[in-house]
Image (tube, rainbow, N blue to C red; front, top):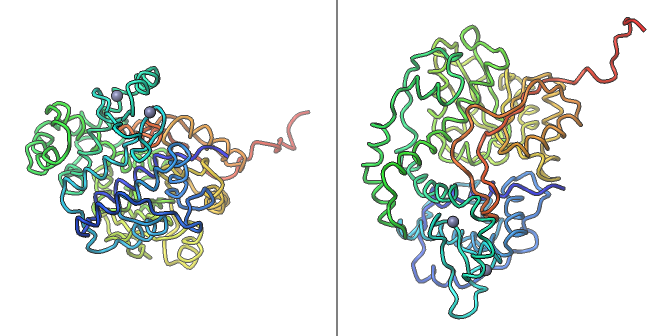
Length: 463
Ligand SMILES: [Zn+2]
Ligand SMILES: [Zn+2]
């Protein structure tokens, strides 16, 4: 078994902190903080489930014992079961006291000694965790722990400084300041091959970014956190990194469409996002893929269907189209469940269109048994129905493991490599901050159908 990618859990927990608001009286907050609720056996996170956050929790605890409990505590949840229910059922009226409280709780989930992994509750009297003054991201129990750790930490300290800014600025996605509004493309899609081309086509973003920097929501962040406001240049770059993360998904789908040789201008297009998780569906809006419409301005209708057991309730959770979508419109729908179930329940009964392309963002099936078992029927289905499939990974290492699995399944691998539309926002591995940060959609693999090459020598060939 390979190590589960624990950044998965950081991402979904982060969303909870921002999307759900806390409403319990303050006295209870203090009580909660001093208690450590036990995880009932039945809800102990393991690696045997199809939920990527469950293996994320498991991996948190294997790196920093007790960290998953700290996170659940800060969210006022008693166990992983409650966490899952909350993510699934969008609990109403869940409210933090105020922004200070929200940002504080989030920060506290990062508070453990990076050197010896001690949590605050395990410190001896008089000890307190001190933050690295350079990155303002990681903590140490003693000078000694910090000294010993520096040879490792110095490799990532600069990047972790950016991560610490981004995780606060990311709140502006929930306030609606980000992403920036989409605009018409001034160039055809084939000429926009990477971020440089995209920026060149879109024009200077500085006035748009500066408007966000001047907004009261930006002020709210720095009034409520325990650090000083970075300068405008830092904030501008952070906003751009967050914008790139949002756009990365859309542009990755657009590149996949082109790579598969599909032409949305000649026929309507159905794209399924298999294994869609919180990342794509929590707080998702019906307009999230509009950039795709600008990429192919003459298109005959594009439908995006998000499918996955971790799909979150919201406006996009509506049935897929039975007939072709309206021309020049990007229509998003979602289905909560495993992809092969969706196929049996809707596609086979012609309640949903067959896909021209299936995209998977970080399926993570290389990570552990539960995830590969959940993915296996889907992978075989994609292979046997000969569907063009385009999956992304967080790192080159994940790509290597994923390729091995796809090859074992005798998939025909058409292409793979670094994704020109990778997110530019570094992702910290929460429980192992010194691990090299990863990037959403940093690598991709394009595969389709069965690999015919092996063992199929041309029977008529010369001896
Ligand atoms: Zn320590
Ligand atoms: Zn540092």
